[in-house]
Length: 288
Image 1 (cartoon, helix red, strand yellow):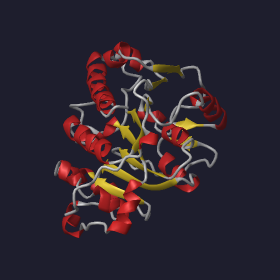
Image 2 (cartoon, helix red, strand yellow):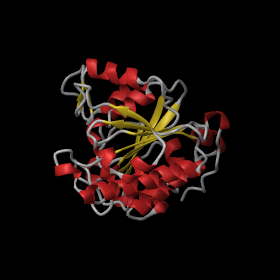
Image 3 (cartoon, rainbow, N blue to C red):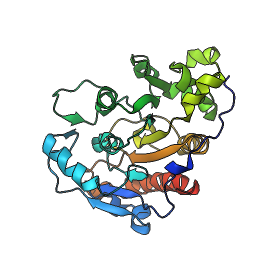
Image 4 (tube, rainbow, N blue to C red):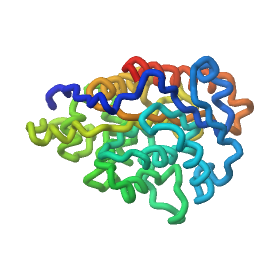
C-alpha cells in the first residue's frame, strides 16, 4: 500500500478568500437551490447563448469564452447540468502551467467526437488530452469497472466505482498512481507501489478537480444522466483529502437536475443544493 500523501502546496496558486465562486446559469436551476440564493457568487447568465446544450459549436464557445474571460480559472465554478461539463475544458484552457485533472464522474467523457469542430459533454476529456499542452495526467474516479477497463491511455488513470466502495482507502495510493500510471480495479489491490523520491516530485504538479454529481447515487443528487453509487460522504472525504494533500488550483461542479422536470422538482433541488453546499464548504474550509 502506498505511503501517506504529504502536503505540498505552492502558496502562489492559492485563491484569495474573497474570490467569489462563479455560477454559470444555463437552465435556471440554481435559482431554485437555497445554497445559491443565500451565498456570495459571481452569477453568469448563460440562458441566451445558443449552440451550447450537450454540444458546443464555435459561436457558442466564443460567447462562453468571452463571458468567463473576466474570471480566473483558479477558483470554484458551478457549471449547471452535465450537458455543460465541457466547460471544464474552457476554464482549464486558460491555465498556463503544467497541471493534472482529477475527475469525479460516472462516465469517462472520452468519446471520440461525432463532428471535429464540436466540443461535447461526452468527449471533452479526450479533447483536452489531444489539445492542451499543459495537461499532464487525468485521474477519473467513479466510473464503472466495465468502462474503466476500456480506457487505453498512459496519461489516464482510473479508480473504478467498485474500487471506491472500499471507502477513502481507495485514495491512499493516489500519489503513487500519478507517478506510475496504472488503473485501479478491485483486482489490483496488491499491485500498488510507492513512488521513490525522484518520482514523487511529479505529485507536486498542481491539480484541477472536476465533479459531475452523476457519480453520486440518487439518494444524494438528481441529475439528467445515469448515476453511480457513491455517497456524498465518500465524495466529500475524497475531495477533502485532495484539497489537504495536493496543490489544488481550481474546481468545478456540474450535475444539476433535468430541466424538463416540472420546476426542477423540490426534492431534486434540495438534494442538489445540499450536495453543492457541502462542496462549496469544502472549498472554503481550505481558505480558498
